Length: 349
Length: 234
Ligand SMILES: [Zn+2]
Image (cartoon, rainbow over all chains, first blue to last red; front, side, top):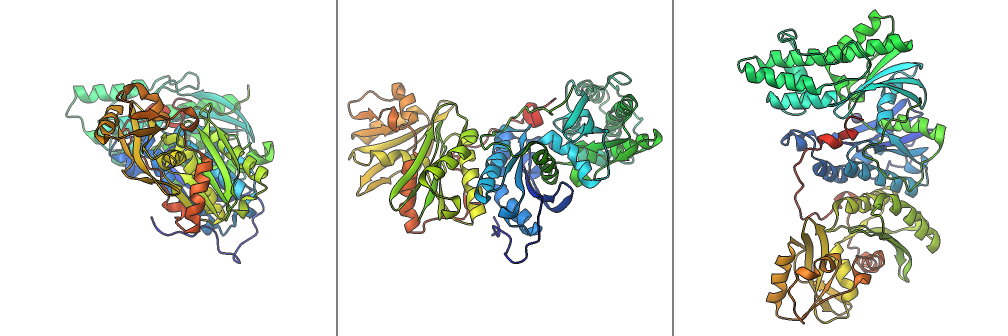
């Protein structure tokens, strides 16, 4: 472990009214960031554990928890030094308290409460899903609700109508696998390695997305998603056609997923009259989804916003941003706050 | 020097504030296994009772296990973050040392035993020395049968202490040479940690927060958490 400074050197500090330190440890990224008033990113450090989990083909909870304990101290130090912020000047320390892997969440929540106590500043517990919604508002502060947000990652696939800060309606979600989970499982089956999203994105580029017509489950009806049948269809196809080109299978699978995601987003835009649509979550880093999502929204006369790839995957800047709005709305969280693996997005209606 | 001691390696979670006058305040909770929920309010409470500000602390002491992983990580993450924020060092002490210390007045061989779940235990042997105990074996993960064999091989009187000894009392050899200490001393105590850590602080036997890690003694399960990632289909 490299030697790291524990705080910013005194004398080079900048005014930090409204600066929030965010901490994210819900899955396999150890992250810390300083964001001012929910929009100005002073620092954002992400230490990915992807190499640790790659040999298992997925995230191993106990391995992730152990890595967070080791990585969080240097990640925090780097985020504070890069931001040039002294802890006691922060407006709050925010941490993801769920949903996610319970052992991993507890490392971030416990650390955040300790930092807040030591510096005498408020602690704010942040819902990871809400943080993903705020990733777009962080990068495009001029976005105005009502917004439709398509949130797609390894753990969740949902369409959310953001009516205002803290006011969300869940329009639809997956009834079985998350989209990212389908990417990981199909990539593993095809021998493309882990994580599956980037691996499939890469081999699919330049291949034929229409080589195989995989099913588009639940397309044209409602706002819910289903990806488990598609995963099975891919496996069955490859078993029946062992000579099928892996790249064409990957491209056809990816096209099927993207078709469904874009179709449902369009339906949501028509149904709600939202004037803008945003992407979020790790799967939002997928090239085809980014391109097709933006094109479909523009075609329908709706402003699309596709965050940078770094803001789509798990990071702590979005946690700090969501924490800022939470703090303004609800004030600090109590120190007896724990972590909740199955925490849901707080919705209205 | 004032220090805060944090202990969370078993079903109990606790903390204490101590200094050269001994332990100034302490709190322990052994019901509910809600370490993360209990610990931060406990720290606030003991500091208020002892009239100590966190910024007055010169070090943070923490029990680094072996023990229950999730509980350990709550305590260690808290200790590391406090030390980092306050720019003070950490004093890391194994859980089994904390269990054996209150048995220091016995001249028998002492076995400190913590329940490791899944039918296993963490244990180590200690002997009385002036003013305390000395560990005479490395902390080990094994079965109650493994410990039983070692107890028989020892051919001397043994005092067993810890929740692992109580739980597997029935599985240990029946012998008049073996005695298990009752419930009152079955969990490592933050008060003991504060006392032991203060002696080490005087000798500056401390480490920096980024060098502190739990003593696991067991490899992680390699099962992938599909169902638990981000709350799955939520
Ligand atoms: Zn996420």
